[in-house]
Amino acid sequence: MTLDRPLPLEIGGVLPGVRLAYETWGRLAPDASNAVLVLHALTGDSHVAGPAEPGHPTPGWWDGLVGPGRPLDTDRWFVVVPNVLGGCQGSTGPSSPRPDGRPWGGAFPFLTQRDMVTAEAQLADALGIERWALVTGGSMGGMRALEWAVSYPERVGALLLLATAAAASAEQIAMAAVQLHAIRADPGWRGGDYHGAAPGHGPHAGLGTARRLAHITYRSEPELQARFGRRAQDGEDPLRSGRYQVESYLDHHADKLVRRFDAGSYVVLTEAMNGHDAGRGRGGTAAALRRVTARTLVAGVDSDRLYPLAQQAELAAGIPGADRLRVIESPSGHDGFLTEPAQVGALVRGLLDG
Ligand SMILES: CC(=O)SCCNC(=O)CCNC(=O)[C@H](O)C(C)(C)COP(=O)(O)OP(=O)(O)OC[C@H]1O[C@@H](n2cnc3c(N)ncnc32)[C@H](O)[C@@H]1OP(=O)(O)O
Ligand SMILES: N[C@@H](CCO)C(=O)O
Image (cartoon, rainbow, N blue to C red; front, side, top):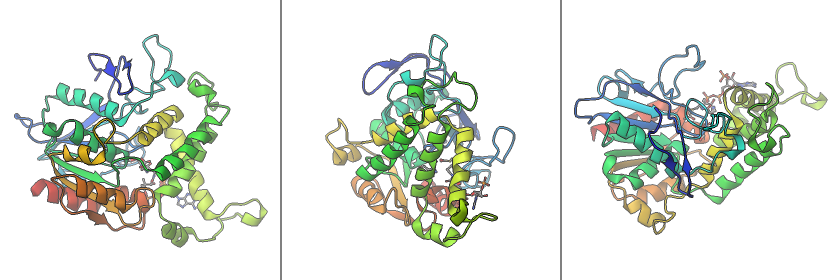
């Protein structure tokens, strides 16, 4: 959908011509009481469910959770998943045309999580959804879910926050800063104005380096050690210019992301994650969390070194309607909210049925 008016931005100014791509599953009840909003993380998209198909080479990223008979049972719930504002899978972002037809590129404005949620609220209005039965997301999706519950408490019935935080920490900002530096140091970046460059001339090396570092932070040290140890990649010798298995693994994740994701979007969304602070302009974190009226569950992953459990404990302690902190057990680190659908599904069922 295209927003019918320019989007006002938290830091000032407006973003005109905003388009939000979204997918839905199930049917909206006549009284619109069965709507669930699922919000994706940094490099996710609106394709939360469904098998691999042309245009989607992998199944939906929470396919185990969404569908008939699944925790988000689409025979009962109407599930809405927007592609985030600033992204590159259908919603307006740096690779989109601005009003004069040229790509936004480096002129794309700085966005905050609140701006993204402001746009999503207009999508809810357009769909006729006054109040979500549930808003959920992990990582950056959790940031937006929290912003929904703080900005529009009356519109969020239940809230499930996964592997997220009330505000980005110094270490999260630091890890992201190195990634931003890698992209901007790539000669192909051109200040963000590379979208008209010949194929293959964008900041692919920088984006790949960013993803390698990010991916290490998304997994756990014991997992990497157990899976890869010091083993050499098949047919290669690390002592003779070959790679260790773990290097090849990171190369693979970098190559996959570079093929499917725009570096400009990665920069905009990463900066928005660094800017995340639910307490900004609201009297601090504690005061902001007290605004939430939703029945809330907060969960973290025991092996998450990027969003450690202390951050979710702060959310669970500070949100008035929150149950005790839940812990997802997984070797996968931060990615546990993606790789443990059975545990996340049990949390979803518990919250919706409770
Ligand atoms: C909400 C969202 O963000 S959803 C968006 C999707 N998320 C992402 O893209 C995040 C990045 N990806 C990931 O973090 C993970 O791949 C997840 C979370 C999607 C899945 O995690 P896991 O199932 O544990 O996958 P894992 O980390 O083991 O990666 C498997 C891949 O590594 C490849 N791989 C494993 N070992 C090696 C190696 N030595 N050399 C090269 N490749 C290797 C596998 O072949 C497999 O490839 P494929 O994904 O193309 O089939
Ligand atoms: N691996 C996920 C998690 C980031 O929080 C992503 O790329 O979106």
